[in-house]
Amino acid sequence: MLSAFARAFKTPDLRKKLLFTLGIMVLFRMGAHVPVPGVNFVAVNTCVKQANNGLFGLVNLFSGGALLQLTIFALGIMPYITASIILQLLTVVIPRLEALKKEGQAGTTKITQYTRYLTIALAILQGTGIVATASNGALFSSCPVGNQVVPDTSVFRIMVMVITMTAGTTMIMWLGELITDRGIGNGMSILIFTSIASGFPGQLWAIKKAGTLASGWIDFFAVLGVGVVVVVLVIFVEQAQRRIPVQYAKRMIGRRAFGGTSTYIPLKVNQAGVIPVIFASSLLYIPALVAQLTSSKAGWAIWIQNNFTKGDHPIYMATYFVLIVFFAFFYVAISFNPEEVADNMKKYGGFIPGIRAGRPTAEYLNYVLTRITWPGSLYLGLIALIPMIGLVALKQSTTIPFGGTSILIIVGVGLETVKQIESQLQQRNYEGFLR
Image 1 (spheres, one colour):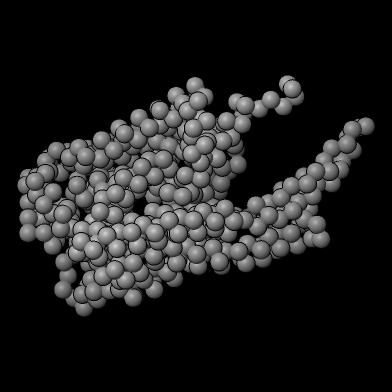
Image 2 (tube, rainbow, N blue to C red):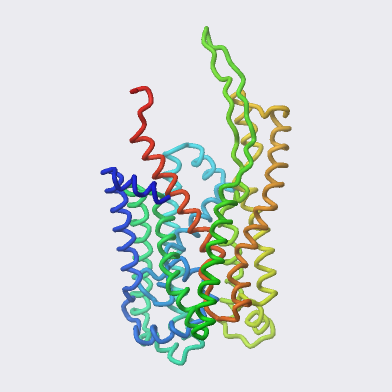
């Protein structure tokens, strides 16, 4: 990885792209520290130091800590992620979107435009919810000055805060597209990577400070060592795939023969990526949010607050694990269509050796996909539980940085970015038939 970056900096155009990407990342992190107009910054700083952000942990993770600080980038990239997932799900059930997806570049551009509109709508909705939560003191319910975070709760002030957060999300979306067009890697993924990685040093240092001088350092290096092991394991599984061989028969067109080539269909063990973890986290986030916003003292609300607010509770952990496994199968089922793949293979004269073309091929692909999705889903569930198990083992209330969604995204984005750099290096250094 380091050699790829070193060679990239020696290539003038790649060096320009890398520096442009780094500049956007710095600008993105600067915006994460600019407070929204109307926020009592002193009260926010006081409450952030005491905050247990389990309820808003997912959104705060993708915003790089900007959510709880109520900055202009407080919503982060989360509205765009949600909009992208919604459009991807709707593509399966709405024929018009499915037709657009099959139109190639023009259809993809149209779907991207719909994603932008939905992102702005979700940003307004989420921004209103966050500002309302902060105004009534529910954002920092355990903080003595939590109700002083937003001193002025007039309609005009609330509207200004929501518009500012929505504009911040729109700017993040624009910065991500700039990286995609002029920089290296997928822009949105790079910004998510930046948000998550920015919190690692502070979280590690909080673990060290939570204990005594000796035990604090022991916990620090223990978490660091576990993090390295987890990263290695995640890289191993993320790269693992089942390659199904495909043979294309020769076809004679005039006097020339076409086809006769061999290729393969790569089915990843973790075909769903990090999407099931995001789905499960978002679904578990809803009951706790409803209970907190309603301030109900009913039995159901107390049960939710006792069992679904803290990540170290056994019921929460078991539900989280089951939801991740379920959404892994669900997302793979809607994102990979064996019948469509089998029809395309049959259309172009392709077949799997030993398997008849058409329906038998689709059944075989579905059988293999189900077999490899089981270990992939269990792997996702176990990786997501690592920070929760670590909290129980270390008996701390701080966040474990090396686990779950963080590692999956960091490793995934890192691998894809390095692959893109190496492919561009190969294009520029390819000598081929010139030798």
